[in-house]
Image 1 (cartoon, rainbow, N blue to C red):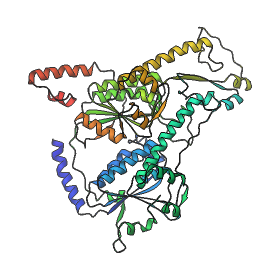
Image 2: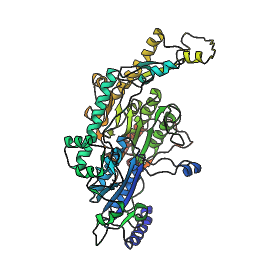
Image 3: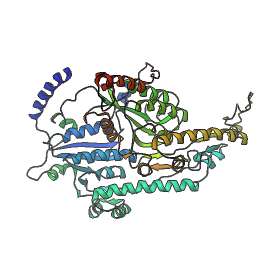
Image 4: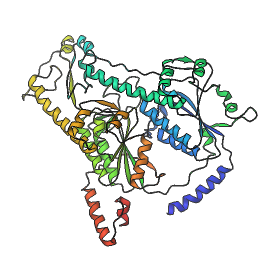
Length: 557
C-alpha cells in the first residue's frame, strides 16, 4: 500500500508530461532475425558488447500493449525482414499482431520482399505492402532427412540402436541408409499438419479459403506485379511513400520508431506489487548437471557441443525456489526441448509436481517439447502448445556409435583389462551382444512403462490409449490437441494469462523469470500437506472455508 501511495502520484505526473507531447499517428517496428519467447539472461559485460541482448516476444508484446493503450495512436507499421524462427515461434509472433489488431489499432505490414517467415506474420496484419521490385519467395514447405550409415561405414564406424519402436527414430540417422516405412508415414502426417496450418494462416490473412491459399502458394515464387495481381499483397509502395499512403497527399501520416514514440505514449496505471507469475524455462537438451548455453550461436549445430542444455540441477533448484516463494502465486514452465536424459527428466518432473500441489502449474510448449520435453510437462494442470509445436515422441531409445574399424584404420592399438561380465557394455569398439541387448531391453521397457504411467496420470487416459499415441510417435501441436495430449492452442502469453486466472491474480499481474543463485535449496517437508493443515486450523477459528488456498490466504490466516 505504501508503494502504491508513492507510485501513483509519480504515474500521474509522468502521464501529464506525456500528454503535452504529441505522439505519432503510426509507430514503426522493424522485426528481423530471431526472437526468444522470454527475456534471456544478460550475460557478462564482454558478451553484452559482442552480442547485445535482443528483446523477447514477451517484451515486444508489452510494447504493443503500450501502443494499444494510447487512443491518440492510429496504428502500427511492421517493417518485416526475414525471421530466423521456428514455425511455432512465428505463430507466437502472429498472436501478438492479432492481439494488437483486436485492440482497435490498424496494423500494416511492409517489406522489401517476403520470405515464408515474414509473410506469415504479414498475413496477421490488416494490410500487406511490398516495395516495387520485390517478390514473394516460395511459400511451400519441405524437410530433408539425412542418413549417415553408409558414410559412417566408409570411415569404419556404425550405429547400434535400441528403440522402443520403429517410430522412435532419433538413432536412425546413424544406423540406417534410408527412411523406414514407419518414419515416412510419421513424416508425412507431420508435414501435412504443418502445411495445413500454413495454408490456414495465409487464407485467413488474405480472406480466401484453403484451396485458394494452396493455389497462391503453388504460384510462388512470384515477382511484385504478379503478387499484386493474385492478391498476395495489397499494394506496391516504397517505404518513403508510407506517410502519404497511411494519411493523405495533403496530410501525410506522422511515423516514428518505437524508440522515439515510447517517450510520448501514455503509461498504464501502476500495478500493485506482491504476487506474480513465475516463469521457469526448460530449454535445450535435457542433461544431468547445470543448464547452460553456448556464448555464440555457431553456423552449424554440433550435438552436445554447441547446443543449449537444460540441466536437472538448475531446473530442480528453480522449481524449489518458485515453490517456496509466497509471492509466486502461479508458475508457468516454458518447454523447448527435444528430450534427453530420462533420469534428469524424472528429477525435473518430481520437483515440478510439488509445485502443483499448492499453486497452479501451467506448461507452455515452444517449438519443440518432445520425448523428455513431454515427460517434464506431465505435472501441469494445463498444457498449451502452438499449432506447429513438435511434441509427443513418448518413447525411449538407446544407441551408441561403434568406432572399432576406424581406430584400426588409424593404426591405434588398444588393449583392455576388465573385471565384471558387462563392464564394457557401452564400449564403442563392438556392438551389443544378444545377451546385452536383452539386458538393456529390460531397462528400456521399464523406462517406457514409467513414461506411460506419467502420461496416464496427467491426461486421464488408459495405458492402451497412451501407447497408441506413444511408441515414439511425434505430433504437431494441433494433432496433440486433437489427441488429448495438450489442453489448449496458444503460446507463452496465453499460458501466463491462464496462470493468472487460476491463481486469482489481476490480468496485469507481472510475470518474472526464476533465476537460480549459488545457495542450494533442499526438498521442502511436505509443503502442500503443511499448508492444508494450517488452513484447516484457520477454518476452525474463522468458522468459514476460504474459496482457494494460496500463500497469500495462508498469510491472512
